[in-house]
Image 1 (cartoon, helix red, strand yellow):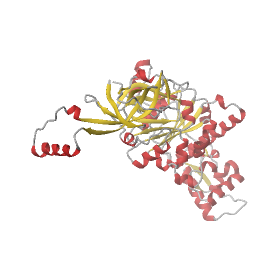
Image 2: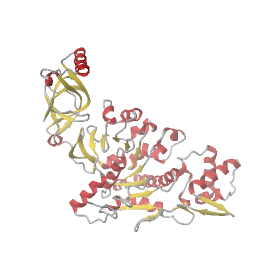
Image 3: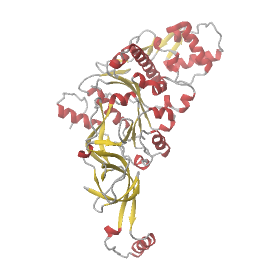
Image 4: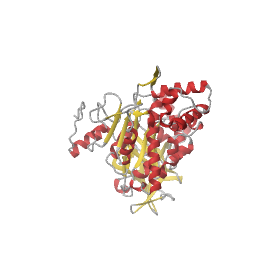
Length: 506
């Protein structure tokens, strides 16, 4: 279908007159001919055009508006029209895509894109399904894949304001990777929304490869979360704001008492060096609060997930599951934010240590990529946090790709994350973001030039996204399928026998 005609402009800002019986939208994909092949274009702005001067337009408008004059234009579809500003995305020549470096032919017609134009978007060896290609608001029912092993090892940033579909997107990504051998996901779930206790969720995946840890009302067949205090080291607390003397005191206790250092802090066992009593008292109080410990009559009581006796194999078990390519979901909805991050720090530190050893031994190539899914990422990757020192999550962001360990950072506020960290996240899935400062942070660190896409990003509706990745030829507009509907459709198509307790399939 012909949508318009090229009439002027320049590279990156091609002006097209819209055909009177068609309608162009922000983000719509169009195709125009050039001497080197077809050029894929995208609308980034819309304006009005007219053959009548602005002064006369205002006069005619006033007559109709104020006097009720039923004035009619002669040939209104020729004299008044809409103009679209388009940018070059890619040049297509015989299903091969190359960077676009030329303009469409002058007066060439532009038409809507079809699936036949997209033969260069092939399915990679390790496919990660992101969603369906989108042209404006139209879902083209054309699946978009990225090379999952590279995408996860080089980190993903998912950003968007509340209600735009971040959780639905993440549920889709987890579902798609559960049965894939190239990757494993550690999901820290502060809202207990991914497993699906009373709704459709990852528990319903036909492979039954999801491992779920929780603390209360643990579903049958899943695991109770208990972690032994001996697993905690001072380095695991680097995301917290301990003062330099407190950090020195913790390290001194760890050097002397090894795995019993926390118990020794609570019991106030003496050190070989002296520290200020106030420093030791604050450190003790913060550790007791973080680990949910009580101390009475020279005895230590454990009230939460951290225990003196139980949980010795929990961290090794989780890491072994990840090394086998499993998906591990940890329900952290009953914990404080710092306790959740401590759990993530424990697992991430251990898996990074193991994978460094695998690289030295030459066995890393046989291991899946392990990616840590982290909600509210600025808690550990924010500028203020990192000014006080690095932590395992920032280490993974900078160095993890060398060891096949990645991050999936989810946030509403990417501007709080330093540019050097944002630049290391080579795939950004951008959902609707209306705040200009947040859009700018994304645009300035995107893999493709999104400088003209501010309006498009602000106008993204729920379930619409733009994917900017080092592993895509251009910034991909996608539609994110609704998770529940996709799972129901899969069950119906494949004939999986799932219970979906408490869920009406209709």
